[in-house]
Image (cartoon, rainbow, N blue to C red; front, side, top):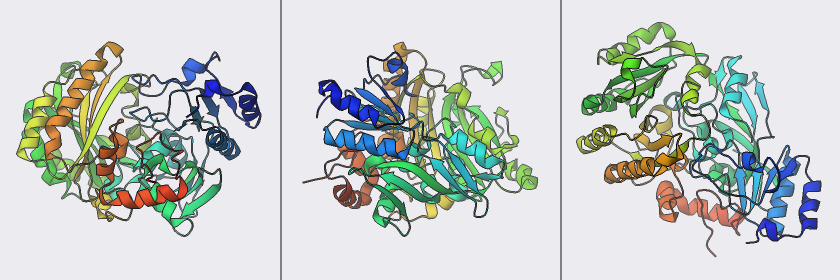
Length: 462
């Protein structure tokens, strides 16, 4: 691969002149600010940023990378844990200038730019009483979350984000622009619903939105010593609940406000709930939850965008992050014991473990209908080591790895790709399971030279 710094200046100047957006080079004053991503642990040094503002900019950037044999990365919201929106020495195509949200109330669909974040989508759809299933942090990029799958508060009611993707516009490795949907380029449409950024750059998404305006939810906390009891109860309760009720379970520390001071810096087993059904029945639905006597609960009725931003303030950009994930079919007694052991020794106040239920609507999609191969799993789990101080990077990384290694024997073997760092080809293959060969075939057809490789990569074989 060529490094950008080794290219002739005239080549770079010619490329820059083709863009409506700007090019940012290492010599520019704003370079260091531009190369920051959500995870402060990532310190890559790209050779150039193309700050794209339209599809033509993306096409020109893809052609430049291919023709000059330079490494290419694509950045949307910049939340990727492994920093796969950046690369060293190569070109980063930044989509943050391609933003628009257009709501069509005649069919409750939403068209969204490749550079949008979910908070912008929620803001635009909420006024119409609509929502698109997404994650739990509003600053997450639409592109990265969608292409990996999209697990969140609405998964049990309306499925994963990819289950609500109707169409996308993509720039392919040869520089062509295609539209993919259920009747056009159907192989690519299948591949991007979980296959990540392997197949091209999505410049716009079209989603099915749903009637969600107000939800009833919030956190409930129990002492960490009750982990075994609460996890056992939760496993049986959540998967037998109506699709309207969702809630992810966690081992966690309360870091500080807005929680009461008496809870600060203590370990808990917690569940964050979200109910989308009849608000008049919410108290009845939550009755068995409150009968488990949480030592803290703050549940109530709220606008959907509020629950989507509940944790934004705790996780601003720039903190140190290390995460590992797995799918799980059960919460057996051995796994619960590991959750108690590591949940009792969380190294920093923001480090935690989450288990997101995969049941209801998300579990009723077939394992081959999308690349997301674990519809039969009960949970997508993630362990995150988080801290604002770089001095604690090793501490949070080691805790996360040790927690993961202790739990992995009880897992289904693969991970939700959005919960992975750079973990090697075997983990990528395990995460796509029986769908990997089909993804590989499509990759070889549309990107045989693996231009789009800075991702959870599906490597085409010769």
